[in-house]
Amino acid sequence: MASQNYYKANLRDVQFLLFEQFKLDELLGKEPYANWGKDEVIAVLEEAYGWVQKHYGPINRSGDDEGCRLENGQVRVPKGFKEAWKALFEAGWRTLAVDEKYGGQAGPFTLAMMVDEFMCGSNTSFNMYPALTQGAAEVILTFGTEDEIKTYVPNMFNGKWAGTMCLTEPQAGSDVGSCTTQAVKRPDGQYNIKGTKIFISGGDQDMTENIIHMVLARTPDAPPGTKGLSLFIVPKVRPDGKPNDVTVAGIEHKMGIRASSTAQLVFGDNDNCIGELIGETENKGMSQMFHLMNYARIGVGIQGLSIASSAYLNALDYARDRKQGSSIKQWKDATAPRVPIIEHPDVRRMLLDMKARVEGLRALTIKLTMHLDHVNALEKTGGDKAQIEYHQGQVDLLVPLTKAYGSDQAFSICATAIQVYGGAGYLKDWPVEQYCRDAKIFSIYEGTNHIQAMDLVGRKLMQRGGANVQAFGKDVAAFVAANKDHATLKDAIAVLGQAMEALTATGGKFMQWFGGGKMEMVPTVANRFLEMMSETTVGWLLLEQAVIAEAALAKLGADHPDRAFYEGKRYAAQYFAYNVLPGVAAKAQLIGREDRTMLDIPAAAFAP
Ligand SMILES: Cc1cc2nc3c(=O)[nH]c(=O)nc-3n(C[C@H](O)[C@H](O)[C@H](O)COP(=O)(O)OP(=O)(O)OC[C@H]3O[C@@H](n4cnc5c(N)ncnc54)[C@H](O)[C@@H]3O)c2cc1C
Image 1 (cartoon, rainbow, N blue to C red):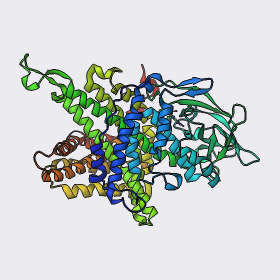
Image 2 (cartoon, protein in one colour):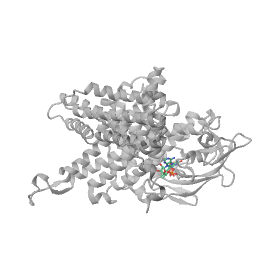
Image 3 (cartoon, protein in one colour):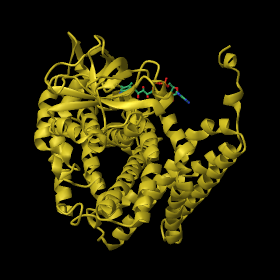
Image 4 (cartoon, helix red, strand yellow):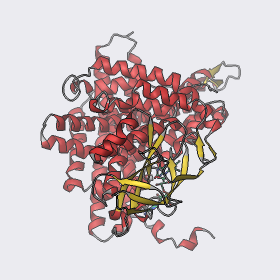
């Protein structure tokens, strides 16, 4: 059953980010993380990494090969998944950041997300089942009535039951407001649910006694569009133990995440599907779902980071081992010794490109989750309102970046990893082809990446009258000003300053378009703007790492084993500054041209 486990994580980098760059320890040892210290965090990370190598990694490839099956209306997961589910909940990994009241360990969200990096990276398909379960439980916990919380949440946190998120319908994908699933109130206050949902991850499986579906539906007199959607708890088995009228019409056969069941669910085929409204007010479904989606979008960013990181580390090992060709310095000598491919400049370019991007994505993700931990700590200790607004504002801005840039980068990093392997990378003998297939979905679900880009430019830039984006710009500018004379990094930091200026100018261009009747220009370049802002953020955070690394290097002896790590930080930041960041200003120029070709081309002209 088990297959070779190729999963690799970079624990050293995680620790560097948590403690040297983002100072997680300043939040520890006091409320709300009073039970947590640096040692505990490190111990959990090490244990989690070891744990996934044993329980998740060995069923990643075999799960991909076997896939899910639908037998007599019941989905069967691949071999080993039931055992992994049991072990996961026995070990308590899913409740690291959950309140103690619900059996959790009340740890920082950032720690839970880094553990999630190991979980997603070692088995993306498997981890979707518990991650969605947790998301669904959190929605009930946040918006449900006391009764609903009591009935559902404990069994979802302890893994007895699973959960799903049911938005998509055949005619309602990105356009969620077109959802037509009906919910009609019954005399007992519950609702009769009728409709079809497609593409539901974990929509059915045979690991848990029950599955609690979060279903977006519309009551008969609800307003049109997203404003008329309500969210319902629709269990596969009702609380009284009777089966609900939820049938699996089919499962999808997919390019990647093949061991994650993606089901078509029919609710109320026999007019006997009963659901409960979450909370007490109808038509709040979209905002409730958004709460879940914000976390789910961070989760997708982590999925991207996790796979990309393992793809990089595997490609690196392969490049150190595989011998081919001679050194460029001896190109005229046919008898020169064959060298490992890591000696070739183009392979080094690919590896450094992957390293910089992966470590940059991790920094972007932790920057975001640390803002969330600050919000949590400030809220629970009666902290300063302006500080809460600042941190929450940065969370709101960084979510679309983490989801969309993280997922696009993940796919391209995995493709680069295949390139490093050469032909071997294209084969199932190595892990990178599966990584690449698994990674493609990240740019599509939880709102396609264009939906993320429109969220950024259409909503997030203007939030709080633009105060969030101004605070972001101020943070970057403060870093540039503080380090503009840095002995080794000043040239790279100047490039960051130019990127930030180009980004700000492009933000101004959007304002002109919004105000000057050129709205249709916005979606033509929204993705490009999201990329510019993500690259600026990643460039900033990598350079911040390099500044820290330079200071550390100055104190280390010539033979200290940590030197290579810190030197790697300097090279990654400089590579990104000189090879990626100048593209931000170039993209700003492209946007400034106001190219309309994609708007003007007649539909018939796309094909002769
Ligand atoms: C493996 C898998 C798992 C999934 N899991 C779940 C799940 O658990 N729960 C769930 O509810 N759904 C799930 N989905 C569905 C997923 O969220 C949708 O596929 C996604 O939202 C896109 O919708 P769509 O496929 O209908 O594409 P469409 O909405 O038809 O989009 C097609 C293309 O058109 C673009 N587009 C669409 N509308 C616009 C617009 N207004 N402006 C500009 N461009 C636009 C899109 O960006 C995209 O490029 C899953 C899908 C897959 C494949």
